[in-house]
Image (cartoon, rainbow, N blue to C red):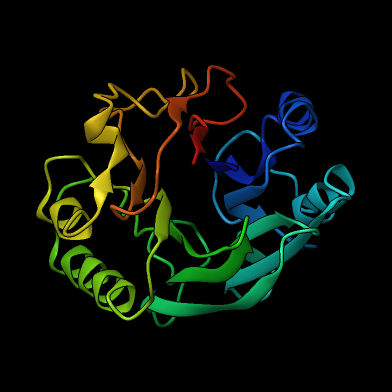
Length: 241
């Protein structure tokens, strides 16, 4: 089975992203972050315009997948999972892991949620968790809010059965307490495979880590890699299990 997680950067690298999705449409599960859904406006002041109808475009690009969108700003921006229609989805939901009141609409510190799904893959029930973690606009080190966010993720993970896969853009450096907490009882594949960066050349700031995949010990990893295509300011992570 194949899973890809990718922060889409709002679809700013439009045609290369679409080409990438088409070339990987045999992937069983996609976990995406930064999805616009029929949005009247963009969520940040980045000079590259986002694709405000990205979710609809993804549905057209992946006709053999069913899609689940979990918004974090109104009903127009959030995260989503696309999973092949042939794979039974037993249950799906979301949990708030950071709530920001009176969000200004200018990017950064908006509310965050954890999207989760239980599905049956080749006779085994897996729990897949998709996260886009808090971004402060300063750095990717520990803060009290980030610690609380990881505590909420870990507490929820402890309630769901294994095997399980936690993935997404956590906006965290690998040496943080926040990442260590998430790795408790899980295998951090970024660490295991000695990955040096999860950011593309479109990202010019300090700190080349943001994206992670964690798996429970009963997940047999056949392949894990950072894919080479630059279709966002993040790189896609591929897990075969």
